[in-house]
Length: 204
Image 1 (cartoon, helix red, strand yellow):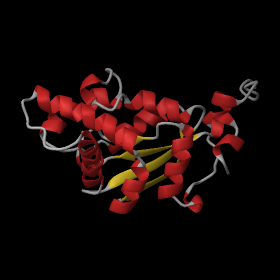
Image 2 (spheres, helix red, strand yellow):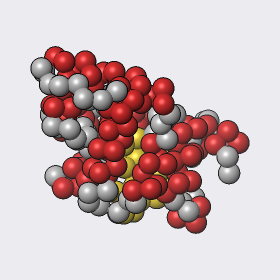
Image 3 (cartoon, helix red, strand yellow):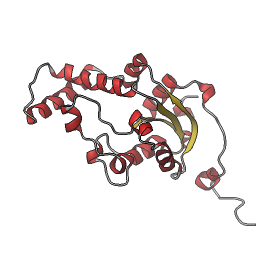
Image 4 (cartoon, helix red, strand yellow):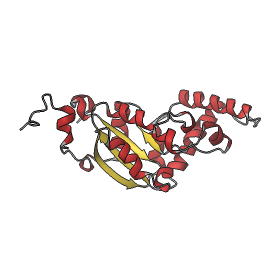
């Protein structure tokens, strides 16, 4: 079923707990943070990601590579490092590093469902850079990485989580990694409290 044909409470979003989250034993802590919002987990599996599909997953164009590469050049200048290639190549290096990272060990793939699921997950996860993520977010609370050190070390930022940037992007990513028969449609008792119009049946 297409995203826009579902009731708003059925919005779905993709989350990966990245290899660093798995290796640090944070799977339960991360799942708990999503669960307590009222979002519903509709599938979960541990998996090894393939390189080709990772490139398809990140789905970046030349404009993105140019923008990110320009930032990498500025960071290299600030750290007195040599500039050895064009901005677009530094931008591509970011995705190359991400692919190496995401295929380095098992990840935990999940689909979460609920009203504004993509926005709720993004809020809980925090901004991409752990150093500047707010206190209370997963990235802000549970790790210390930064763009600067990852750029100096020529590696991906270790920020524990991948989450979809929009409902439309979530649908594309979900179709890439999960079969429809892996997604379970079921009812949670708490959905009556979250979504039922009149809270019928509470009083005896």
